Image (cartoon, rainbow, N blue to C red; front, side):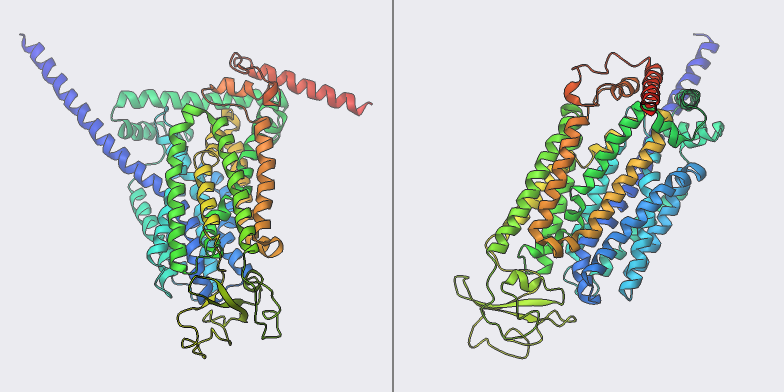
Amino acid sequence: MSKYQSNVDMVSKEDLLSDVGMKRRSKYFMFTLTTLSTLGGFLFGYDTGVVSGAMLLINKDFDVSPVWHELIVSSTIGAALVFSLVGGWFSDRYGRRTAILVSGVIFTLGGIVMGAAPSKEVLLVGRIIIGIGVGLTSVATPQYMEEISTRDASPMPTFVTLIALGQAVAALMCGAFADKSYNGWRYMLGLAAVPSLVQFIGFCLMPESPRWLASQKKYAEAVKVLTTFRGSTSVAEQELSAIRATIEEKDREMEEQIALNGGSSLFMQVFKSPGVRRALLIGFCLQAFQQLSGINTVMYYSASIIRMSGVRDESLAIWISAGVAAVNCGATFIGLFLVDRVGRRKLVLLSYIGVIVSLALLGIGFHMMEADSPLVTSVIQDDKCGVTRTCGECISVPEGCGFCFVKSQNGTILEGSCWKMDPDTSRPLDGQCSDNIDLMTKYPANIDWANGWCPSQYYWLPILAMTVYLVSFAPGMGPMPWTINSEIYPLWARGFCTSITTSASWFGNLIISASFLSLLEALGKEGAFFLYVGIALVGFTILFSLLPETKGRTLEEMESLFLGPWFVCCRGRRSGSHLGSNNVQKEREAGQVEVQMTSTSTHM
């Protein structure tokens, strides 16, 4: 063996060892980075989900009216709606990493303000601050995860799963602190500052997204970051070339659209493009009906709904709510398993059928409980509490009334009366259940006080319906609107269209969270859920008619898919699969047809 050959072998072994070391370090680095990134989805879920259990205790401390209850719950959603629109611009201008760092600071500040809030007004400010963080992270974190992941791995299902996990952990924290009557809700809300602080410190040491660096023409930095991610300089250079090609393709497509439709804004480019316009309409409907079908009524008010179903102990109601949230988290993993086996369309429609059935079951359950509501047999007071006829009417009086009842050994209600409550203690101001009168000698251990709930043999039905709802919703209507919206738009329109559909999701969320308690007062419990059934039926009909199967489609096939017939029933079995290379021409032809039709109609 020559000396030269020996040196070559030695260098090759050293290079091999170096490559192995780089790849090993890159795996550890990517694991750390992915963990820190997913904290954004976790915080999203935690801060939107924790309010369900916390509000049961906050209502006691601050004497919160139904309007204030809705305001505290929905203020986070309203702020998130506004800043999700700002978040896209901010992360494009200053970078994904910067946006995540800013959201980490905001989450930490909001957690501290909520945990230390001396009044409901300060608590409201804390909830708004948290909403700003949620809005920013709902845009920046998926972007960052998308841009650091390998090309064959979509991070969106993971992000949605982390939201569900955050909601489940929030419910568990609510259960853990439910018995701490004064400070419990402060721990529930304030602990959100801990993971956000960890994320902030961790991201101070993390690099910027390589795709964002490439979009800013910082190619040397992008290669350096990609080498750290992939563990190989050659792989990093190949990936950077692919990223640059994608950016150039996006710019080229945009130039073609401008040439086709004139030099108008991106907004007008989207709405002048028939295929993209139709995809945006379907994506908008997916996100809007996901929310308008009542999911966040169940998530934000689950503990309150459980209390209304007849669970008298607040701590037990919060723990049952935690179990329901855990079901939601577990069922989300079913969707990850089925999405590429069943297909997007089937999973959405099957999920929606389960949602409609369970919402109807919730309405039926509360109707049966209302029909089974104990009667007010003793009318003593001449006020709004005294004129009620049943326990259900009694606890629904806005001024605050409760039902005092005497039951036999077998649970039969012997006597019932309605009394005004002390807002500070939630106890009756007078009557046989008040602290001023001791009737234990007359009714040993058989006298009880119902505040916010009524005794019923059907208490289990709404809890069962909520569980069925989440088992149905989580695999399909939970992640699929996000997944479908991430893959149906061409590159030049993807950012704009995704921003519009995300705003639709937040707007629907805001409508539901801000109106639920008012709906309960106006329509009753069963009426509110039957209204959601009607909305869900409309959504199911639209999606059944318009939503095509997008599984396994290339980007070219996806564009052509939305240039075919509007209704799915009118499509061929392989509609869109043989198209793809002539999409711009087809859009041009479709646009010309529309122009001709418009011109004809103006001359008729």
